Length: 103
Image (tube, rainbow, N blue to C red; front, side, top):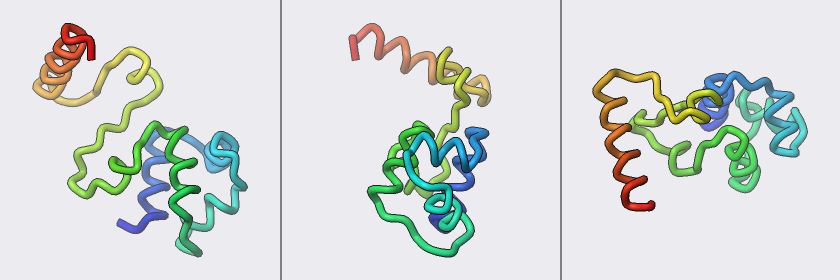
């Protein structure tokens, strides 16, 4: 997937407008909309600034195996994931392990 399309995908998955993401990343709307439209590319520094409000790391952004969990604000707040029960069970086990290990 192209960089701009991927950025748009994550932005829309978080239900953020171009205006809001640009505001939170402290960049112009054109700096965000142009790459999404495929008009130009963005720098890694700008990409990092855009990913912070989306709660996505560069590693997750460039991950190609589609194993990225996109959490809504409410899911992030309560530590919930809307996936299968099996995935949620695994998530709970990992969470308990991290808490018990003080990680």
